[in-house]
Length: 181
Image 1 (cartoon, rainbow, N blue to C red):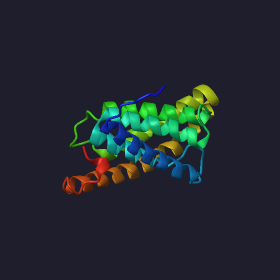
Image 2: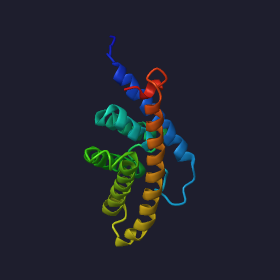
Image 3: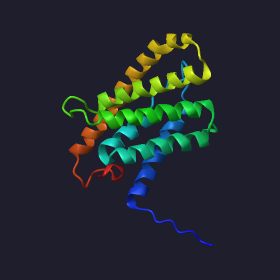
């Protein structure tokens, strides 16, 4: 018995972008972290680019595929780190869905990235408090995590804004195929 699955050009584009985000996640997993949970979030750059170029639906697919496939590759699927990553990504996507309706002249890639970074870490801290370490002492780490979210959210937002500006400045014939609308 043969099963035929019909795929579209959008399916292929999402798969390529998710693969790129997964690759960035794997690179990030190899970078030593000063504290558990503090990572640069490089794959979020891909999510922000996809959100801007292809919309929320594509960004959700890319982000969730990255979390699930990355955890399968790293051997953390359904572990506490997977739950933390998934909850952070899911709540960040909700924040991005809401924040993308803010006025574009005041809120761009940098603000969206910062909002997503703060939401991601807030979701993770909530899961840690409610599930893993139900002690108020976990809140002592909030300033460190908030500073990391601000730093990495800003850096990732600046990179995203630069990539979007560079992509807009090129003609459509020179535009990289993965970022073509």
